[in-house]
Length: 492
Ligand SMILES: [Zn+2]
Image 1: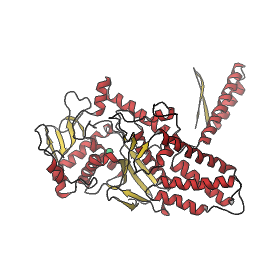
Image 2 (image 1 turned 120 degrees about the horizontal axis):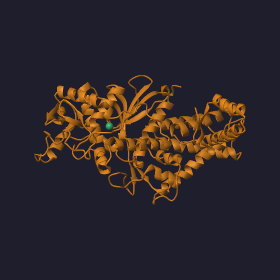
Image 3 (image 1 turned 60 degrees about the vertical axis):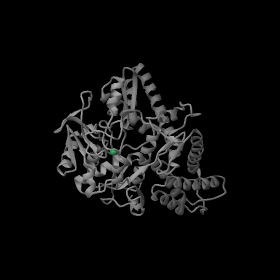
Image 4 (image 1 turned 180 degrees about the vertical axis):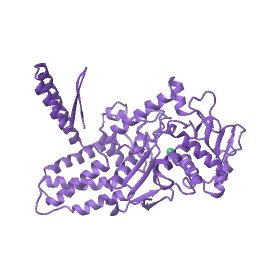
């Protein structure tokens, strides 16, 4: 259903600093790019919050009937320790410390990231490109930027000339930084740097002898600057003008500002129509960050294995907790906050169960259509999930009254109520349907039982029965595989 036609979605655009009506470049289609993780360490819960915010955006756009191409990259090269193009490559450093190959680091933490996104019920992006998979395209973009006069080469490295760009364009358009002020306030270069100006940023860095991750280029054996990959991969897969570009608030400057400059000088267009930035998660009143050690791992929440937790929490509770705050607000993490979310989440899930057993009456004491509209209004107002959840609890209140026979609802309204509640709770907020999980547990149990009976049949040389069990399960889409360790199965 093309619900987007009747829903006027408004998105807060970090570029204009205002809520704007969402208009896509192509009718019915959305191109969305989100800066993915640099895979040199385990993702922490703060990262999870950022990616979950965009998972929710992706889910709502899909719910509205848009065809969405969602690109989320993996940074596997070029991300240095600090923003001034200095320090070691984060992945290379980890590889050096652990005495393994950089690509082993990449593989280990990419797998970890995928495990987390799967556990936390994120929908997979449509494309997940890597920086190292796009070196050729990055070299081509650097050549284009040089040919337009906005980059220069020094000793095998190439830098973007921010001052030159700013003469005819606005470097600072997104972050609001004034480049003239910045130049004024920076001390003169100490002669160590090759850059013309400290504000310039690397497009290509010549690798020193120690640097393992290197590729040949017209300038030197080296590696691309971190900002470049996102300009390259977003334009390659989504075109010169994309609908939504997202990321954490901390990426606004310099990363996203640099992306705009790079893309703009190649295409002459503003590369992104709606810039979205998700706010951070605090722990002990401070930003969760790997570098400071002030963080908690997503797995620890699910096992309860951390000294600040009194127990384990489910994925749904964590999603509920994160969705109770607007994605642009700062959110404070604590055990108490999770306990409160657990109460709320359980109440919501309980009412969904109760809803199944409600019987229809002749009249409705609940204006379902108005309520449904309020749910959409909340989401259309820059994905306001806390207001949506407050609205969902209006329905919970009604369901509990109806359960106690203190209110009635017609059959038609009951259908709308069920459909709407399911859509928002499971499809949009992405909470997990525990009943579905229980059902699948039951199916697993039944298949295990049949495998056991088939084994007995084989031991009795009753091949006909053994084959019958296997073949009839296959018809149902359940494939048995006999191996040395016994029989396993897959359900398609
Ligand atoms: Zn990026």
